[in-house]
Length: 196
Image (cartoon, rainbow, N blue to C red; front, side):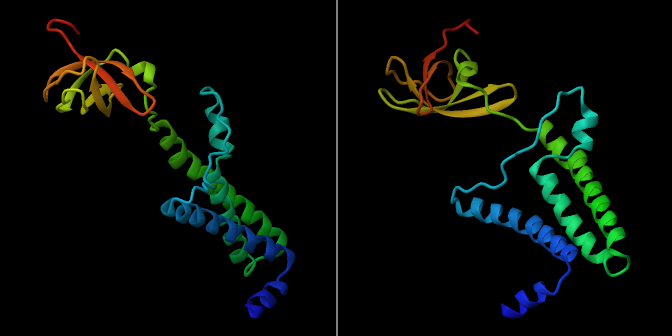
């Protein structure tokens, strides 16, 4: 460890900046992944980007300010800078590092981050589910529970369900969701024939 620290001390200021950028750009996503897998609850990948209006596609594409784009910049800035130091002067190396880091961040933003955000689906709110028709997928027993499935805006949702009147409701029957409790249990009633 002493040799590693001694080697770090001999680096120039620019080499230290490149090395620190590269290490941060690599370590932060790895720590975020490890913390997520271990469910420790420390989520470093929070989205700190600035969402611009839909009319400002130019700004949202050319100002890559999401956490993933910033980390991409750091990796290419650090790595590109360290490699370019072998071939060019420090000033040109700094220019190369900034350009390659920025270019890679823009590419990540345009072709990965923005398309993923467009496809992000959020769960419907409880108010959107109340009143919807659902199909019983696991029979609701008398004074007990079962399961229903409801489709809202092309999103299929499963809920534990209980009958409003504590009656048994068989598999495959159509019910109406009357209420959604805080614990996620849907209170349902049988739909009468002819009602939609």
